[in-house]
Image (cartoon, rainbow, N blue to C red; front, side):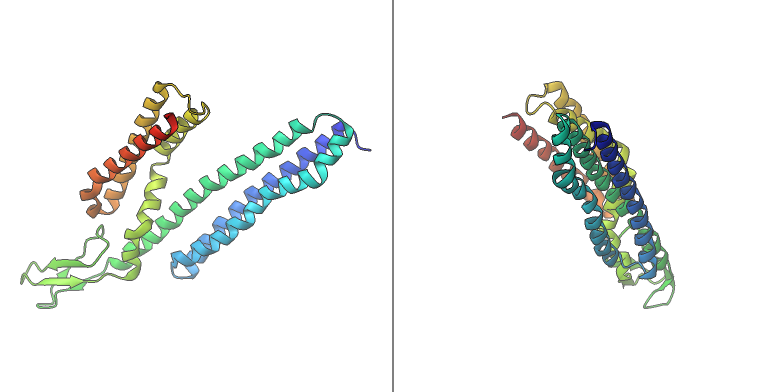
Length: 258
């Protein structure tokens, strides 16, 4: 029968291999998604479907921790001594960490792919358009992702320009993903503030809520302003968007404190 030390060493080695495979899988997934985006002429939806499949496979690594523990490691350790609970915590903590890292990776991946898609869409939209009346050159706006009505500077004819589909798609979720990455530091501060509240299990001091509210407001202000920088049409929604987020904060606080 294996000793306590040997069993712990084997368990640590297994967990290390799982984490290494996890990191390698993320690297391979990123490379595959970028390659597929280019190979499919920037078919973002197809790449995202592929990523969902990759993500499901990567998640199997976390599930393997529980499976190996239940079927093999726990029975062996319990037969030797009273130390299995501490070793179980190692696996549980790693599983939680991998899930958190996967969520963060997905946020970053979507942002990077969206930036590539955005750059491509802007490039193909940045071409000469001509007035339907006098054939003079007219230019569409690169921060307005819908059909545009451009008045010719020479003959005053109003031209309706319907940009390419990929350009129109930028205004859907692409700019949101880019804005998320650009405001990652504010997001991290907000997440730290809410985590400090969660650990108090409904008993967080008011000062914690004030810190979270400040971080919550700072993040959403930064996020919406980044979106406006990419899509000027969203500026008219800014006040309503911020009011909506304020109400979300108040509703969440009410639920957690009553």
